[in-house]
Length: 135
Image (cartoon, rainbow, N blue to C red; front, side):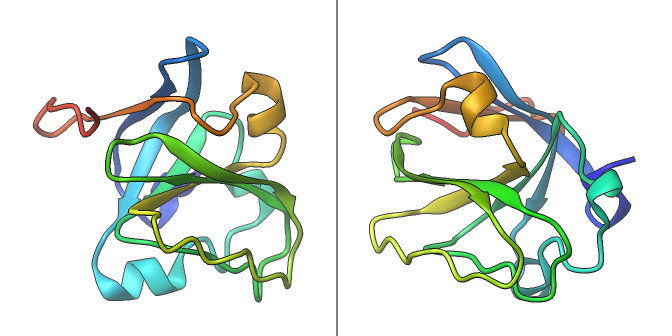
């Protein structure tokens, strides 16, 4: 099991512009402690293709203490991609983007595989209430 080990899977994220799934098992880290803890203590085998962590609110992330690289997608208030960090290696600090409302942490190579780019529209659907979290 991927990110669901630490966070309950609550939905999925789709790159609407490219017609590509970013995360079919999306967990949400919203309260302070889960946002701070993020993916720490997971092994790369615990965070596989299809997994994702949506951090809300978030302007930037780090991989301090992590043992594997991740892809990071920054989203604004309209769920438009405003910045990406592909293959953010362990023990790095990603740039802070003040206009970012949230961040998707995804398994390494997701950005390349889905051709996700700045300007793409992302749809995040949460299973609990089935409401879309995008514009």
